[in-house]
Picture 1 (cartoon, rainbow, N blue to C red):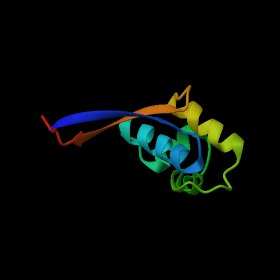
Picture 2: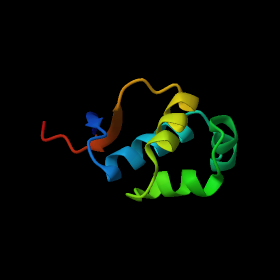
Picture 3: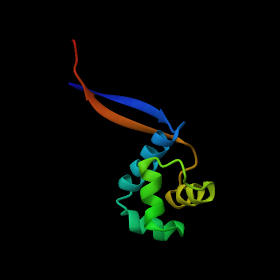
Picture 4: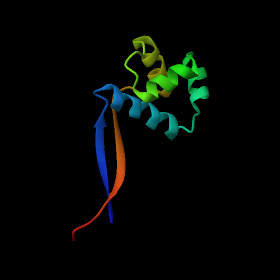
Length: 84
């Protein structure tokens, strides 16, 4: 079995939600800790991570800044069956 690396561009709300969750978890942050770092509420993080379309742009930008995210691309890895 080998791993397949997939490039994901956060081009819609669902992928943006995955991007935020991916980076938060990669840094070992709770939603509350990220909210504190970004100066937003924990429910705002929950809405971002659920892909809610009603999230304010300034909130999203604060969260990206707190995470140090400069582009909307991330990579995932999953196991793939090998036919070889």
